Length: 128
Image (cartoon, rainbow, N blue to C red; front, side):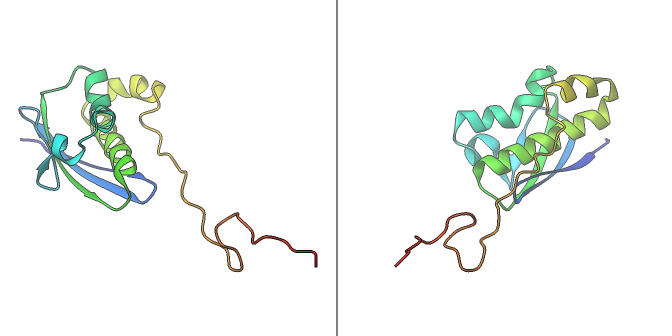
């Protein structure tokens, strides 16, 4: 049985997945994905590449998720699943690419600067 191993990142979240033929179980950190992501929008984000290509219920996906918040983790997992599908089915690549599922979102939190309360915010200026 062939296992496909890929990685996806978003903000500070990292998703490492192991995808193989099976009954369609998605297990995240030894929990079901519906339990891990209780919001329907995040469940949709996770399954988006599978639903788009009618592959739901055909692959078992075991996921190690680390870092970041809920939405960052969901989008990192979406990227990892899309990359795994590209490895298995190279002819699906243009479809996934057109929908923007293979693009690694580079936006990160800007660092806090010294002498300021936040990254861009300044302390109130006083002339006198």
